[in-house]
Amino acid sequence: MPILAALLSGLVFGLGLIVSGMANPAKVLGFLDLAGRWDPSLAFVMGGAIAVGLVGFAVARRRHLSFLGLEMKLPGARQIDRRLVGGSVLFGIGWGIAGFCPGPGLVALGMGEWKAAVFVIAMLAGMGAFDRLERRTAARTVHATT
Image (cartoon, rainbow, N blue to C red; front, side):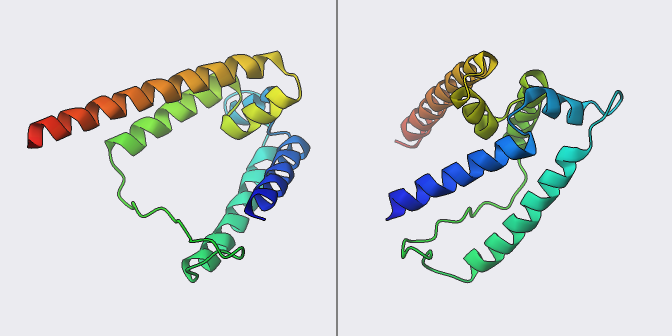
């Protein structure tokens, strides 16, 4: 049942990205072009997503199990640190250059958009580089404490 719920949730999310225009890099770049021909329509999409997310997290904080009976796994970190800011800056730069973020990039790839293929390859390479860096950092921490 959890796999079916995840599949249906992903399909609804992907359809929402297509309908809202978030899978169209030209629309996203128009939204990010504050000094030029700014397209504010995605601000309404984001506002709606934030409203739904606020309700969802408010409900989730009061529960110990999901509606499917699985353990709730909510983020616990609350501090704003260098890693969070750096990751946010990198995310924003990538979004501004490509017009994609991970979800819409995968949806656009599924729609056959070749630019999305380049984005997804770059995203996977970045994830791999981050994983290698994290493993090295963890290994140094273990060696420093022993």
